Amino acid sequence: MTSTARAARARPDGGARPDAKAEILAALDARTDATPRYLQLASALRRAIQRGVFRADEALASERDLSAWTGFARITVRHAIEVLLREGILVRRQGSGTFVTRRIEQPLSVLASFSEEMSTRGRRAGSIWLSKEAARVSPAEALALGLGPHETVVRLSRVRTADDEPLAIETAAVPTWALAGPDAVGVSLYAALAAAGCRPVRGVQRLQASLATAEEARLLAVEPGCAILRIERRAFLADGRPVELTVSAYRGDRYDFVATLRATDQDGG
Image (tube, rainbow, N blue to C red; front, side, top):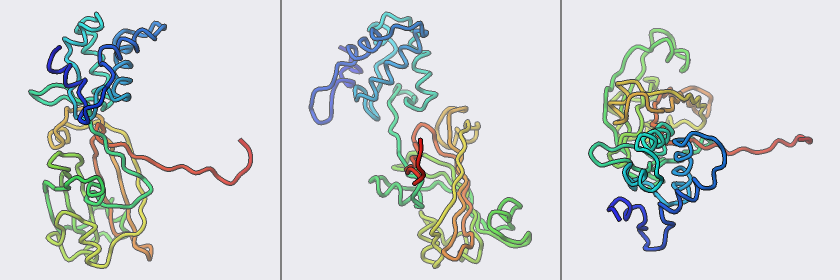
């Protein structure tokens, strides 16, 4: 058995785990349709990951092993893996191999800073600053923040990290009446706003699926064209004044944004 296969079967808690080869073959044997082989294998691998055969941050079995187990050509195996790479289920690490991603679920119903979200998950939030400035408001910022065309904002652009892993690119604009200046912000913008008595209490977010540009890919350490989530957030004080406009690009292979849904009181189906 290869070291990759042994890693796939080992569990940190020492308990038994379904055999990777057996699990994948069972999933393939259950298929009775005419779906292309690479899609069948992608489905089998997806199922194996969901069942914990391959866990977050673990290496996937190699292309050679998967080809030997299934009898599929290496090119077929490669196409199957590429499907899961595009879905963000797998990620390639230069010089190390292909790994199962560790995804973060972020609730859409909670207004919290990136730093607060990472802290609740036991991860260390950080920033790689791209720019900090006090500048004249842009037309889009003026519209979102209810400012005049000659007013100024504190504009903050940075890569947000968790345990030193880049997860998002974030550009925030805040009216200068809410912050003393760019240097008032350390790790957390919301901590700085709270210290100034301007912590937002309500927000509106808009999400859009997109693909990473070459520059975004470089900053987030992903391949160009990988899936990202573009998010625009406007946040407001208790008196209704807008205090924050943040535009972010989150790695699609790390984030799931989750919303809680409730039925209305209306009768009928």
